[in-house]
Amino acid sequence: MRSALIAAAAAAAALAAIAVALYTLRPEPGLYLDFRFHAPTGADETGRLAAQNVSLCIFARVVTPEGSRPLAGGCFRGIPVVKIPYDAIKKHADRWREHLRSMGVPEELVDRHQIGLIVDAILLNRTSRAPIYTAHDSIPLTLGDFKRPQAVYYVARVARGRPQVEAARAAAWPARAVAAAEARDPTCDGRECYCYGIGESIDAICWIPVAWSGPENLTSALPPDYFTSQGGVLYVKTPVLVVYNNAPRAGARLGSSILIYTQTDSVVARLAYSTGQIISALRQGSWPGVNLFVGGAVWGGQRYSYFRYLPPLDPGGRWWAYIWARPVTELYEVYLCFDGYEYSCYYYMYDELDAYVSSVLISGVQIQGGSQPGLPHSALMSSFFGGVQMQQLVVPETALADGKLDPGESITLQTILQSCDKCSAGFDVGVPVGALVGMALCSALAPEYAPACQAFLGGVVVSFGYQSSSLYIDGGLENIGSDYMYVYMAASRLTYATPSGCTYGAPAGLYIEAR
Image (cartoon, rainbow, N blue to C red; front, side, top):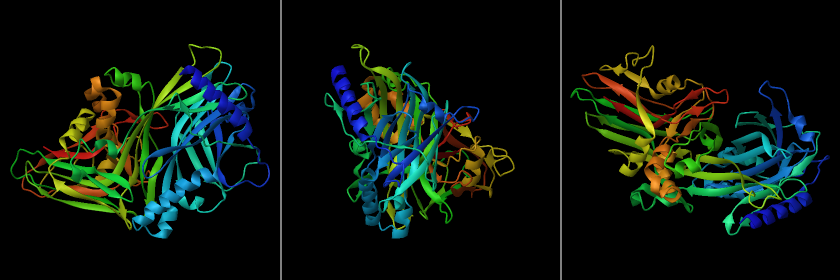
């Protein structure tokens, strides 16, 4: 295994040396990522790339309707601008256009549709073999930018000590040299891996997929009516609102609805991710001591809408609304492989956990879904409840200022979500991606400790709502009965963090319970 990795790394180094090309005149078609590195003080440290012992390594995956696919990668010296070839992106953009058109999405909205580019960037000191910067995030790309061959330029800012990448489309062309990242698909002793050589040596950084889970892995755990297919893509019922009237008073009657609609903003699903020692903890039956982060959009579009009004619920009544979506969870190991240490080829760096919705079923501009009585499947809810905790909703200066709704009182979901967003993270509906796909992933990853693994992943929720952090999905709750009810909502037991370090418990489900 180690010798194969070294051989793969050596081949990568040789190919990278051939692949690096400099474009100082008219840029060739492709996606250009201009990385800028900043110290905690804000000082620009991009100049550190000029040092002889520093390399920038990247690994990029594009999110397709089915899930992420490795796109390109490489390690470079002294060149902060990286080019991903146009042809590498074009086939995935064409696949998205074909799929969106099969669902009747208007052509002008096809061009505005967003897909995710999940990017790793590691600034490495080759002498100490220690990372100076590490970043992992999703950069939303617009399909219209890749309709024809052209140069598409993004500035990608990374702050030391923070995993997020702040990327923005820019029109200006940098007066600097460019390195061409290479699209490769290697294996290591039959095991899928992505290794990129560092300079002339055979040192390499390797990303190794460990586990993947999507709707295909759930067909044996959920009933057939939980699945539907469109254009060869399998979708599963994915909860966006679960309401349970558990109030003991006969006169407490609950009405509820959910609305996602905007003419001015995009509806998006964001990446939820974490890095650190994750896999070893799950395999030992313990919860990883890591924070989760909300990244950039991996799926989104303009004018997409969704509305469901749930029937009035008497005490004991339960109902849930869902969308047809593709929840996906992936785990990678990241290693530094270097020459000269036969028993130390694998120098562990960290693990990566990604959870996202790769695609949502659309008809024209309507997000497809439905609602039904009861709760989602028991296997899903068992994993979900292991990863969340119930919190009473107390929203100052609203009908829930005292934590309960009296007869005739109501409150919007927008107001609830805004009050829960203590860190201004713009978190909307917490789609329970981890609870859905964690059932299959944990059985494969840690069968002896599957319950603990599922409980951890049960708290992994993905933000689904508007792109703007100042907008929230709408709908509401109303007491349409003759007696009061207390209102509770599920929040993830995992710690979510913003770039500023503010931490919060993300709303999950949305699961709402009247008591």
